[in-house]
Image (cartoon, rainbow, N blue to C red; front, side):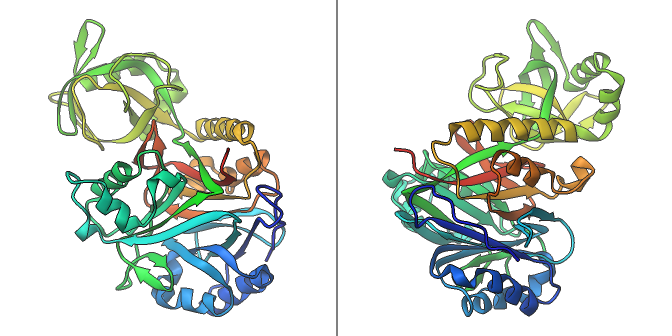
Length: 413
């Protein structure tokens, strides 16, 4: 296993180290990871990610780690796979099998507030923001960013995310939905306990998180306006003075596509929904689209169901997802993030969809490889999720097939 060098970013005492094990035994995995990290000393934050193969051992995981490593805050989750850095200082995406990834962060001047929320006892969305802030334990005036993981069994996910946005409107929130398993406990880790609802932490003060959200789709055809909709079902679209049901509109778009895109459309069609305005601007950089699954179509009436609620006047554009588009988008976003960072990050956290990785690219470790292209030697860890949490156009969204990156960076003065 590897102990990565610290980075002179925010002070000489800043330190980030990560270790990865694929041992099938929990005890062996912990020994391997702890052996690499034991010289770190007291850390401010320990992030622990494990694959679902360790689900039955989750109650023992943090207590065993805490016998060997020291940190003020412990946080993590179980997922379909893990991201970490091996002994050769190579970032790896372990999509299958056993995996334990641990990152220790020493962030001088940071304020860290860890928390757990019960999705069945959330504050009122129609009430004041203070009860939400008290539940999290962080002052919104202090700024910073939030890491957030949700258990796959909970309901009211959208209410929880909306409540946190209500309480902390200027704060980026990044994370995901943890993995499913058959054990009789949750999938989340906090302090020395397993949790079943929501856990997270706010990092503020001298340090924060820079978000990079790559949805991996490209638009096809024109931008339409929703003329008629019922909940999540599109009934009619408008383009200029022309009206058509969504199936007819899609057929017209298909006629303009090259043959490779027509073939790709059979299994990679999505819908992009504008979040910020209802004008028909073409500038996607300033008016990003939130990518959503197509749930089904009604050939008889031409209606289309999508995985989100809809409003009349909302902008909609059909989208295609493929490996080449995902590479290009993430590459560009990471390049832009590299240029915008006044000081380099000390670590990168990746929360990626189970549908990415080899299934999307046809090869492994592409997302982490692109990150290392722009941030060489950077410690990388993370989790494969059942849904990713990241900001789009100023609000927090639950994504699919997306790579949500959290770069640990000094707060810009």
